[in-house]
Length: 181
Image 1 (tube, rainbow, N blue to C red):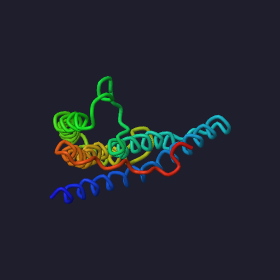
Image 2: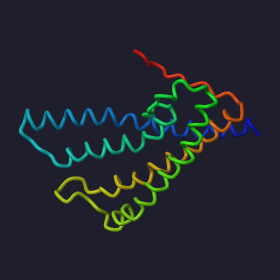
Image 3: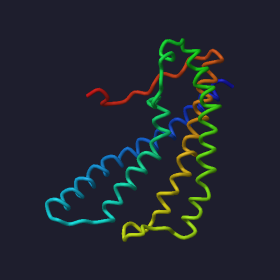
Image 4: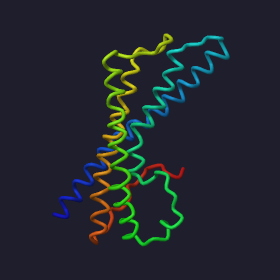
């Protein structure tokens, strides 16, 4: 049973990490588009609303698709005045309880509060009001994707830390080629 739970935890985390690594390419696109906007504006005096709005779309997409990956990699912001001194099992308890009583309710709240907002946007196929990009409803849809991805990773975290609380060792962190260069 323990091995099956560990396999599920690994599968869920691999799914989240695959989406996170893929969405990381949005950062490159964001930089390239930003350079293009600046060059067009200041070198050629050309302004393009759609191109400028695409920066917002890229930034929002990068954040909303990458947030679960950040949790999977344990790189999220944490105020760890005491946490750093805790034993691994105590940390597992903190993470388990934090996921149950903080992360899961926040995921539910984000999804519930965003649902009407997103469906209204889809109903009207909302676009930019000032001649920019015509598919704002797609960007707003990520408000529903974000809590779903976080929920998937939250389940993986519950399995991971639940197993640690039960006395099983935490899996070793994944290798990151090229890190520290």
